[in-house]
Image (cartoon, rainbow, N blue to C red; front, side, top):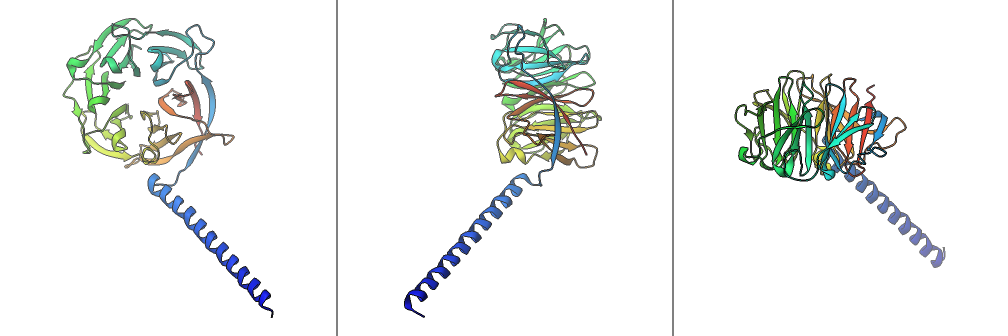
Length: 333
């Protein structure tokens, strides 16, 4: 064999060896990425598809388009109310997306807002608004007439971002700036002592953004800083928590929660563009999956934040950057 042929053979072997090393490195890299992803998430992602029933944003109405909508709620008389943050107002929609009315403007007087962030209604369809940078909750009639202020800076509020009303008529306030939960009756009288404050213990929080109730009236609090949802009794005694690993994977904006009539818990995760679902009927909340794609396998969400559920368990989600409300129906196999 000539020296030239021997040299070429050696080069071919080197090339093959080099290619094999590159392939091994690529495989190891992909395996590492998958491993890290699993470690971050904590469980394999199970996909729950959903049918998109409607998208609406107020375009075409005399009140005009939404601008960075946040918290949303559905009243007993089947209207959807939206905390329209950058427009400093509250918008009222039918459940098929027609804007009925809007009220409020920027300011600190009664009926004015400075970043309305969360919203709830009671059994009489009165409206409660977490008026964040005015540090208060405002109460209105169903047609938007001012009734009263609840809490406020004198009550120790600092940037309350959400509010919720239990079936027993108790108003719960998520005071985000102080990481505390306050309770009031619907006339504005304080009920018990606030709980929380900054910390990692089960009765402490690191920024609370949302409150929901299950069929047993247990209280669920989205504790964003600790990347979890804390479960408490109706008297605010801690029971356990649910680690939301998606909130570690990509930091969400103001994660909010809702519970449907079947005791399924839905948690928004804007960073990972999904709504995470848990079954609360089991002894320990069971992860069911994540709503990410529609029936045609197309992504549904861009940055889901506020969430509400109607009597038929259709889900309404506010999309912040797109300034829209999406109405979707989860498909459980």
